[in-house]
Image (cartoon, rainbow, N blue to C red):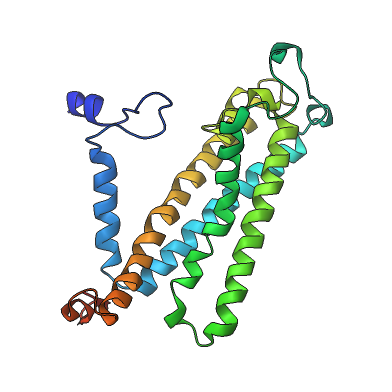
Length: 237
């Protein structure tokens, strides 16, 4: 068991170590579990999605409030620190840093696909869909902006880890005005919330794919048999 866990779990790919190496059995198991969950009906899974989204946003808000409480205004004015004398004023992380930040901000727009994929489940789609899309974009955009500002004031920007910004800031900021126990507690609490929030990123596209496949059946791109409803779970085949 130790050999399997050491060689097939927790191995990150090179060079940046963002994705796991193949074969990634852990990700496969998680996707299979969520696939089975999607077979038990849309309403129950939508409730799971709402709960996980609320937990994710709640954890981010808690981290933001904590960082604002222990913020240092001089961190915002640090432009050209001594340890980064080789970094220019403009685009200190280069074009790749700009693209990474743009990708993160683009999540505020991508999330609008979740409401639009459930048009047939609302009573007034012409009114409900635009309202849901605008609301989701505003919420995600506002939370992302506030959290980025709080992180900048809490931890010097040149120490921020691009791969795991909030958790590493809570773990490594030994000069924080907050108590050490409180900082560790926030690290565990926020980290747990972020992990639970990953459920939304996985299950939302899987639920949306059911509606996409149903539309493809109605357009004749897939066999009609897939549009039949499985009676026990009220889900399309």
